[in-house]
Image 1 (cartoon, each protein chain N blue to C red):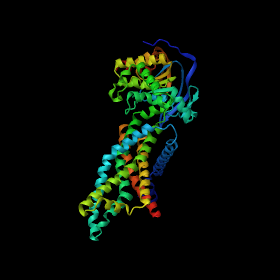
Image 2 (image 1 turned 60 degrees about the vertical axis):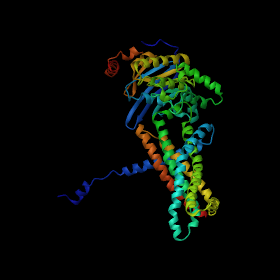
Image 3 (image 1 turned 30 degrees about the horizontal axis):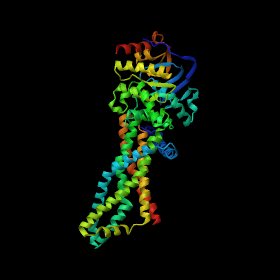
Image 4 (image 1 turned 90 degrees about the vertical axis):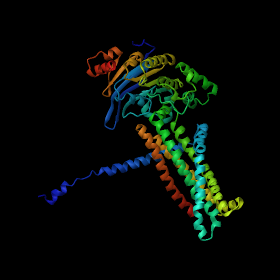
Length: 270
Length: 257
């Protein structure tokens, strides 16, 4: 029969360094991300400037996303108005619909929807493109030819998303409000000028400002996450797929976190 | 047939390596490599796949760092270069990749002018065009100038990759498996091109290969990488005139498969 002491000896002891290893790995990854972001700020604003490539990337991010942003923005505005009407009509407050729509769209929906669409369309594309360039040694080829691939590939793409997402977000807000107007006009017969007046009435400069700042932060996040995942991709075609997928998931997750943080900060200024 | 002797200056080394070691986790790839590349010489590094041949030239070009040892390229110590110095040195050291590594979103013209435009910003558009056309003509593919890489054959992609390397007029060219994946006729054409590059551009080269025909026709000197070290060196005949079973097996495999 086992003595209590010998039973205790038989309990398998897990190696204590497993968790430590995972923690160390997480911190190493975090350190890499911070270094990557710092490198962006170090290299993005010094010559040589790649103006043509920046324009091309802005076109890729902006113009090519326009159709999807237009459709989504319009539907969001239309559906939001339609779904809000029953609640407001219970209190006889349907005349508040334009104000409600504008506040919801400007403060939250337009930047958030634009960011999520851009993360899905552009973030994945940046991750896949750079990942594919990494595994086919195209990034190495740039490096050995005396050029700076980080500046040409990463800085330009991150700048492009940072510039373009706020523009897309403003456009999405406009289209969403238009969607809201069509629904209000159809049901309440409100004229365009009255609707627009009611749309702008509750909005303050802080709303426009916070919406713009949010979009800039979202744009930067989408670009930097996509570029980081792609630029550091490995393990062949499997790595490319993972980079694209991970770029979208991580960017969307961070966008939601940033939304919460910015809303809290802006709340202190109201 | 071995290539004829060329203008090699044995008093001047362009690359000197001493005691180079490189490991990936527990895999010790290079275990103390010593190497001299002389001015104007084509040096072939032979060895089986996975023996660290490509690692060697990636260390020379600064894509990988050595764990230990000294690597001098054109007199510069690769272990102690700033990013700016490394970038300046890389202009003088061309690298031809195994899979060509052409930028697949750019035309052949854009591929070739990419390093030139960024390293010589004062060149006019006309000068850039002239240099691009000249180098394409030298590799015999001027007609592909407006094509995309996806429209080219494997051999053409190799040539364009070499042209992109030559546009900066490097002093050293590193070829990573230049004939891998090509048919025998195209292999011969690439071997001839490597010799032409040596003559036209007065380059010194390291050619990484496991193709003995390539080694024989392009190498002024051949070294064989075995178990992480250079075990044999000399002319093609000298390297393979041995009783070493590992070398004989390598020779037999090449000519029986």
